[in-house]
Image (cartoon, rainbow, N blue to C red; front, side, top):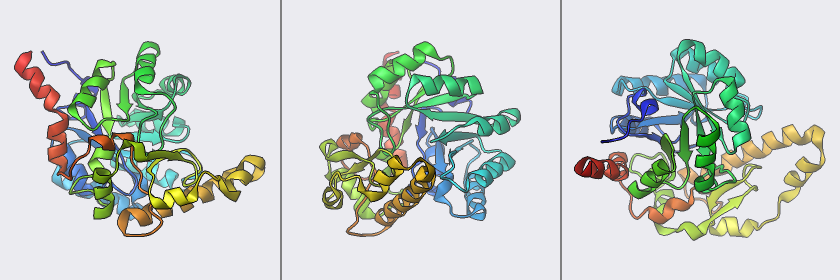
Length: 324
């Protein structure tokens, strides 16, 4: 008997998998393929520079699938586009919103009354309880092995702790690139998983061939955490360029921690500068190579289609059907 995953079933997904929103990676082609392969998916609103482009992306996805999908919003003050992005998502009634790096109160208050689900990124129990009290529909538990902006706790500690102390669904994020990895997360008690890094190595991903091949060529030991790019810990591949930066926090990072008045503005500047560096490396060859990824690149051995990746991840369910 296959366990039921009601949250994902409510999103029209056959499997409890969310293709994570990936900055500068996720595009409409990936979204459609993921949704039509039996999982759900979300993209970052910041992948689109203008409100018109965001609206066009939502319309394009809807023209090719009837499945609900999500949009990721950065809900802190560093995202000057947040207010308009939220307004657009509410107006167009997207399936769900994932909030990151800030207080989701406004997002939840506007989305809940009209049936838009809100999932909140969390890294610890304290914040999980806060968003539960605000009315979040689920939390995305970002562990210490997640790609991009990761948490502090391993999934073996984070997932059981959240399941014990909160009542809303817990989606495990970090370290999943195989069917066995999915199985382990579900056995920890997760109500589903958020999977990112492995989908970067897909034919449909909107990044350079060099970036995709890097996920095949490098291994987990090449993944490092750095604050030099965005001002907060970021999981990246330790390329020659990253090695050349060393561990020096730099003038702006030092100033940010010394001057409380300027902290907000310095943080915004560092974030924008870092996003530009990631964008340049993602789309073209450059000596300033900043490739975001998680340690699960150990399990990436070739570049496949989104559908092939989904089929590989969901083998555990095929085995369950055979033995259940």
